[in-house]
Length: 281
Length: 358
Image (cartoon, rainbow over all chains, first blue to last red; front, side):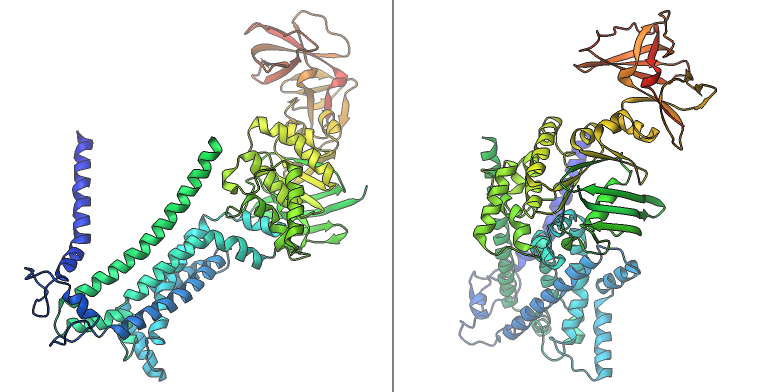
């Protein structure tokens, strides 16, 4: 009886959680199919159409609503996210590798690194702006903002890799050394393939965090805007459903990536299972 | 026989713990050496120092005549077989075995056909034919053991360290691998240093048996000597087949809390810790009133229980002070004792079967 009550409570809790997670997304998705250009970002749907999707790609006749100024911002954000991902992952893997051995001041260095994701973004962004002004360094998305993105995402990559190394069995490396293989080659041939799933996760973290970053970029990116800034900029004038259409497309893109990942995982699992069955037969 | 490895005064501490407290040993070329030590005796640390995974704080390690304390593991030419096998999980059986040949710093083999031949030979030697393309996560424990061994042997090291190599296998497989290991070693002609916590394994395997106690080599001898003439109380205890009594010899008898044993023609060993040892299977069980010869020792005790193991029966007796004494009766030479529970008997042994440490 009591167990039933707990189950019910938990069920309701999960239902609420999922609702709050997905309801905003659903609303945006539905509104993106509003008729254009006269239809606005609110219910009811006057008429279903794909107008705003065509509008995004410049396929609609010119109207009073300007196309989203996001093409270059999208490119900048992707480039910035990829740069950040590479640098942060390399730093994260090397730092976590260094942390496998105890060294003097280890705890201090740990907190110093992790601080990068703790401090408020607005403060760091503002600080960077002041420092660069003081030093006469021009602010750019590929310069000052890039540095801040690395400072922000490196701790995440570092923590992911730390967890991976924590479960890593060091004896496989020692086995390779005892076979006469140098530590550098052992890392490349044994360690890295084994930690690769972790490296992928670290890359994913760094990429998404950077791609989304707003507060640090706001002050540090200078004249050229990244995608979150550009989208925010369009809000300050007037919101049209073309932003929603864009949101739906990027979400679909993410889902596509995740699906590829899931399918690959499933295939490898199935293969392992098949071999196991052959063994028993 | 020349020496392949020798250690002198090797020390290693972990915090307050003296893991290795002045190790001196030398291993002959082309032989099977087993190292017996209870858990915590420093045996894994010793192997790790020899392999180069740990640096000793003091002492010298000489391998093939050269000092190697500071030489990194990949330049030492010493193979290591791990207790958990430590196979490369992302590589197939064949790739695991070929890994060292293809990737080593010194004299790597780039010719794929040469690698293939060597791998095929070693796979035949350890008995893994037909499993070349299997993932190492999809083979049994015994097969993993063979892959680990083959992977090391194919690189032809001058010394192979085996860290409790059979610990992860079930009892049946263990006995079979013991014979296999000896056969494979003889074919390869290298020295094996086999570390184990099992006294039967150590005695069965070693041409030479080293006994490690509290970070020191307590005894180094052939299996027969170790078994029949353990040099100290500690070694006798590890062998798990001696009744050990504390006390000290005085006035022609060995006196201790468990009784007084008249001394005669025992084997004597000088040892820091005094003691009196009599092997389980050297003790006879007689009625209390049976006569005792002049060269025999008799100890009254109460029968508690016995354990039948097939070829032998182990009987447990309790002394007045609660101390338990074990007697092993081999059924091929004597009938089963069939003692009555709670009845008193005389435990009798010959003086010259006992060992006295003083």
